[in-house]
Length: 328
Image 1 (cartoon, rainbow, N blue to C red):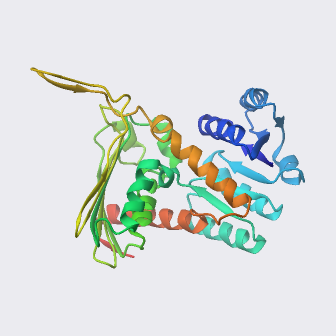
Image 2: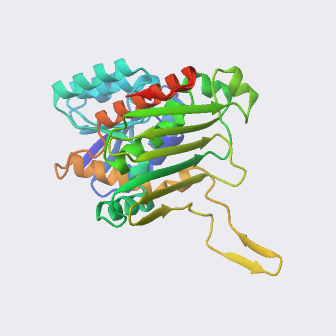
Image 3: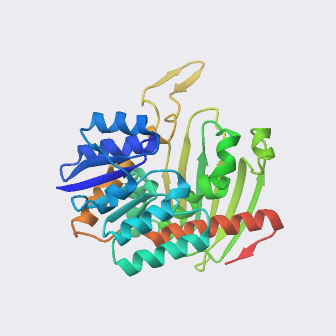
């Protein structure tokens, strides 16, 4: 049984707490959060301890840490955990500054502890099936990839100011998915964006609507369509075209019942947001990390993946500002 210290008792921390507690090989040992009331509520629910950061890092009974705290704490906590020989699961991103990410990964490598970065969409059953079919040669050589990712509603402008912006906060998942599916690093990127959804987002210095095109050494191209608003639910789709056909992964709907009548057809909307849409993905990525801790596998999604996705986000922002394609 692996004892886990959970850093962060907020919305995503609560998801991870349930998955830790429900896995037969892991125990939610302690919760660490500066907002003590949130930590106490979660700890009581799962009969876990309340600890400080220092106590958790020094506790020899803790085998691994799950970092789901504020973004600006991630790199520091990763380094502390690595130096204290804890196995590390960290929500994306490692940090919003690329150089800080690289410094952090040097520390992790020197300490020789496993680091898993939580790009959960790789573990969604639908997307994973598409990837497996691609690997099996179903569509042959890949020619193009279309990724659609639209949130149901925009975040507050206060969040935008500290999130690193749309590319580092939202599109970063899609940069990782493109790399994951195509299995190569892009060689060029071009981005365009607008502020169409909420004027406050523009005043905060960000965009809320974007198109990004990436070119890969094989000649394949990936197009990402992002929006902070979707009036019909959380829109998450993939379309991968190859020389021998097309693979698609559509939205997961709130239910599968459809009404067909003489006036038309009515079907349910896509799942409301990421907690519903990626419920199975969060469970699957935790199961993978348990396998990492047990020594059965190495992390499929490592610190390098976190670094590369942030690098692409930075270059997309550079392209947006300069209005031209950026060579990578």
